[in-house]
View 1: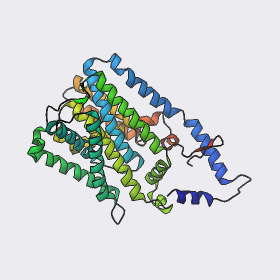
View 2 (view 1 turned 180 degrees about the horizontal axis):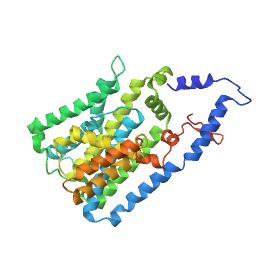
View 3 (view 1 turned 135 degrees about the vertical axis):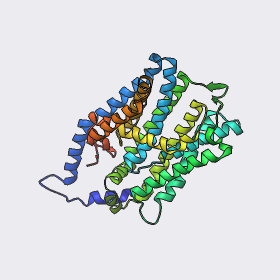
View 4 (view 1 turned 30 degrees about the vertical axis):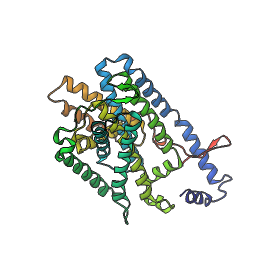
Length: 364
């Protein structure tokens, strides 16, 4: 795939107006990247600092709530990878989130396995496995899959998993699996509070950095092109459906990790975790914050969950209506999400390539 891109670059005419097209493109793109490069790190830094000091200023019950929000932000990150960068509208992201939650709950209930170094990798592997199976079925057919086909396929998978969980006695049926034993590290038990909060925050930061590296790599450049014009990427020699399947599997693994943390934090799992409601919920997080930025998914989760918490406490009868109107207004007037107020279109794609002689090969 990389050879195809190199061949395209070498085919550019040698001289136009005394300056090569390649040099002009590199100079313009580098200047644009430098002009907008500082915004995203500032936003990320502000969010990180706020997250680090949150338990120091919040009451205990709000720290528990903040922990739940951080886990959901990790879940939103998985959807932003799939939709924001590859253009795959997955209405079944909760399938990987919830299946991992059920998996680690069964490990804790039936096998008494709660060690963090066992249950979190197990949950990640469950999410990866389910996403590989579903992604292989929906994306790796003989003919390219349409957006509608993948959307309805993932939606159907999530709905089927919800009905299965509700009707399977081994999984607890409608009641789910309650009273999950706490996650442990040696003799220490992770209970609700600052320790659990900083654990999930550390995991979120590590996963975020890995995702940032991924989307700023050559693979990320191919994903950006895939989102904008799939036919052109295929013309360059990339196997578009394979790229989609890879990022779909990575998103499923991240969702599985989030589901494992959520199960141990809440202490129980229930059928809604794999259902359509949670799948739609994560779509709203990314829409509200801004897709294709990673940090937008985190910001959207924090704002939606925070506003929901405040509205439900102060306007108990009509808070869903108020929240729905707010979401509708944001989507209507800021279709790129709230992050578009501070982040330009150029920086949503970013620059790619290695630094050579003080300059960076940037995507045009």
